[in-house]
Image (cartoon, rainbow, N blue to C red; front, side):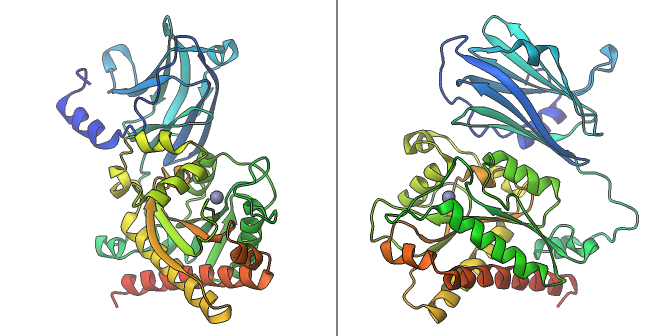
Length: 397
Ligand SMILES: [Zn+2]
């Protein structure tokens, strides 16, 4: 940081959020950089550095150095790490107007340095996800507005206008059925699997939305495939979605636990939320509980206020519809927890936990297509309502 000018230091301090800065100490050489992946648009790039084994890391930023013809760079030092030869030999060319190339090398014994050469100064943040361990670099470069695009007023944005819906005329929704493939999610006492239930709900929501002009709907998965959590968010960002809805079914060691809850990304509001996030993230509670999760960047990258509003609307709609058609459903309400799948989402983003698969009565309900249909109807209804409120705000009503 000492190499930075005060301006850059302020910008970087504002932009650089280390969610898991010191995750664990590994003996030198026990972690190996095994891959570099990325997703990109002209205004957003997510780079993922995959490791076999865990390493500590430190992220830094350097401004451009015209004297040496060097661009602005983000560099990440992975301590206690080595790198596979093929990664060493093959820098990842991105060249999307935002970043040029991602390269990695042995900086010194036991330290691998990953360098991201930027095309221009951009805000960014770095965080880690575990099991398996990977370091994620999100780079945010707002593209200049197209001359023909009507600029939304700050009031309209504050009032909840979906980011690009004003120019597209449709609300773009990315539905994310949780889990899939090798990851079944939670399983009920009678064998019902979360991954199958949420895929069924996701397809129902998609089919309903496709019948309406107001929506442009996509899915992170519409088959039984495994997708890493960071890829789901990256897909939503890449698609310029206005809304991201991750679909899940709750679980608890307490077989009596039941009901509907909807989450936004934040620190956990209670013990169950923390346990739930740990399970959905695929990490032990102890690991998540000790993490100093800094999520203050939501005001710049995410849309917390809007996410809270949509989460409440979705939750109320599910409770109302299920109660109306089936009766006796617990409203666990709006909650907050550190779900990895929501980290880095650049749009209104919520995670629905629609009933408990570990509750016998709710597991039986989740086998009923009518029940799943009621949940799907509620999601569509809530997003329609959310979009209409945004349109009213745009019209100044
Ligand atoms: Zn889940």
